[in-house]
Amino acid sequence: MDSITIDTINPKVLKCEYAVRGEIVTIAQKLQQDLKDNPGSHPFDEILYCNIGNPQSLAQQPITFFREVLALCDHPSILDKSETQGLFSVDAIERAFQILDQIPGRATGAYSHSQGIKGLRDAIASGIEARDGFPADPNDLFLTDGASPAVHMMMQLLIRSENDGILCPIPQYPLYSASIALHGGTLVPYYLDEQTGWGLEISELEHQLNTAKSNGIDVRALVVINPGNPTGQVLGEANQREIVEFCKKEGLVLLADEVYQENVYVPDKKFHSFKKITRSMGYGEKDISLVSFQSVSKGFYGECGKRGGYMEITGFSPEVREQIYKLASVNLCSNISGQILASLVMSPPKVGDESYESFSAEKEAVLSSLARRAQALQDALNSLEGVTCNRAEGAMYLFPRINLPDKAIKAAEEAKTAPDAFYAKLLLNATGIVVVPGSGFRQVPGTWHFRCTILPQEEKIPAIVSRLTEFHKKFMDEFRG
Image 1 (cartoon, one colour):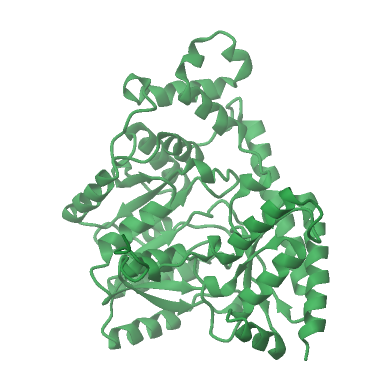
Image 2: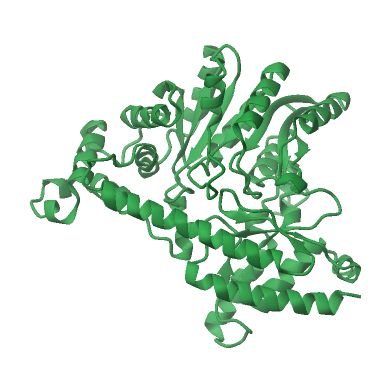
């Protein structure tokens, strides 16, 4: 029976890593069980998961309007009951009827078209038009179970062998390194400049592209994550135009990860989609291949577990589009609740709708609280010895740099672990706070970081700050040398 061993499984699976749910999280889950079985057995009474962008697991409440529509669509017979009028808002009932009218037989448990229900794609396309001021075609939309399967589909399509490269930002969200490894391609890194607030320099892109070419790598695409994950920066329009010109000149597919588009916290920055930027430059289908990713998991809605998202594909020939459709149809279709949510996220209540006031208040409460939490954590991190942290302009994370003493680096080497993973493990065991070591996202060699979400409840932030501060002081005292 031992014909299947770790040495005989697909080596691409072995090569694939996903730090956001890696070793530190496994230790955290054991500690959590331990706390349950033996209360008081650790110097903390709960595990604080700051490792993953999973808002509702940290008590963020879902948006009422979205859940009302979902509930009505999931169990349509409620719509026929008289008491429903008193329980649900008028516009939620109206929207549920509209959505159900698009689904043959109101069957929300049936497979849909492989790209997603046409009426829902219409709603998303009009939402994209409203956002960008340029037309969007529902036939360019592929609804997926979150943005991740859409990224996998594109990697599957673009990577032919390890000689094919994908330019990815470093630090990067590990979905990219994992999916490139799984599909047998090569990750071509380009480094964001921490000194300039994680700036994206075109000269760096050109340098990495040329280096890859001279190593025999055929670079197919450029991944841009905006707002950034794990780095939280928001690109400026001028920079985005340079990126578009670069992709056009080099014939690269632009893969725009825009899942944090609603998460911008600073008044001097604004989100602009790459679709809007390319169209405002006068570029259309013939000029550039662009794939834009969006998800229901982030923003102010945080519906991660519902697995909804989409990609918008423009600038591909009909023949290639057919192949993408074929890939989508192998998976039959994405789940219907996720599809419905994606349509709601992109076409929420409008001024004049009954739910508009309460919807806007819920949205504003979440986003303004996230901005305050980001600021509080950022200030705390920057006050620690040897720690510097760029501001979180957007997304849900901070990515502080830690200058670790030589003694700590040596101790990490002896423990056969990366220095930032060593720090993260000690932090977890002392405080119950779970962060992801920067080495899981890749970083400039010789620098150490960790990624921390801004998602714990606002009232828990002071406790996190004091635990972290106390731990860091002890750590530095112990290892200062």
